[in-house]
Length: 109
Image (cartoon, rainbow, N blue to C red):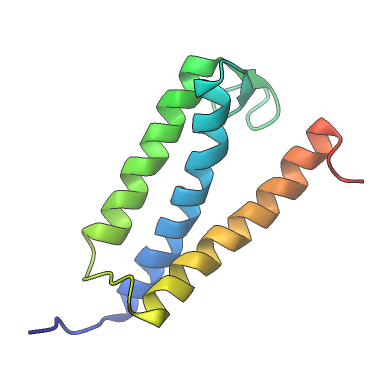
């Protein structure tokens, strides 16, 4: 029996995609031992945080993504709508982060 789809499932999956995509730069930077921007740096989002803080922030984002995607409704990888909504959240935050971090690291050519 399939559970009834509710409007807030799409919102949860969208923000799940946002948090899932935000996991990547922080875990990669942290696991490679590099400092990177986090909300905890000074100034927030522009200053650098340690590799350890980035690993912790990346893992926090992963846990939130898990809670939003797996624990809300019944996300199905074979359901196109679920994947599109999650992918849209990931794409929009990825483009936003590319512009933000590109301005700090010379990537906006």
